[in-house]
Image (cartoon, rainbow, N blue to C red; front, side, top):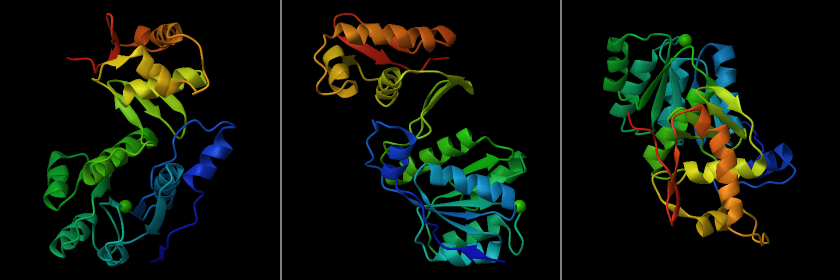
Length: 257
Ligand code: CA
C-alpha cells in the first residue's frame, strides 16, 4: 500500500497561458489540496487528472488505513473517498475522521447505488456521494459545489451549470445535456458572465464593461448582436434562459418546472 505526496502541477496561470494564446479568464482562484483515496488505479488516475486540470494539488492513496492516516493530518480541502477499499472501508475512514474532529469535506465514490448505502455514507459524515460510473463533468461539478459550500466562495475557474447548460472555464467547454456547443471566444465570455450572474438583471453597459476589452469603443448594440448569437446557439436548443428586461438589459434565469 502506498501514498504519494502532492505532485507538481502547473499553475493555473501557466495552464491557461498554454491552453490559449490570449488568456481571458481571471486566474485568482487558489489551487486547493485534494486527497484521493481509491484502490482502482484507472479511476484514481481519472479523478486525479480531472482535478489537476482544475488547478488543484493532488495526493493519492490506495487503501483505507493510509487514507485515514493522511486525512487525519487535516491539511486537505477535500477528500475524494472510495467506499470499497482494502484495509478499512470508506465509511469507516469517514466515521473515524469525524470522531477525530476532522471536518474536511468528503465526496464518496461508490459502485453501489442503493439508497441504504447512500444513507450510510451521509450518516458516516459524507458531504456528497458519486455513483460509478460517473462522468468527469459530474465529478467536476460536485467538487465545485462542495468547495463552494465549504469555503462560501465560488472560484472563478469553477464549472457553472444552469438547467441542462454547463460551462467549464478551464476546459473552455459548453455543453447542453452533455452535448458540446461551439462558441466563439466572445460568445463564451458573454455566456460565462450570464451564468455566473444568474437571476441578476444586467444592463447593456454593465455587460459591455465586463465582457468586452477596455479598449473596445463600439456601441451597446454589439451586446444585442451577441445576445442574438447566443440565443440561436443556446436558447433555441433548450428551454429559454436569457430573458430581455425591456429598457434595462438582460437576465439569465433557470427554467422553472
Ligand atoms: Ca474500490
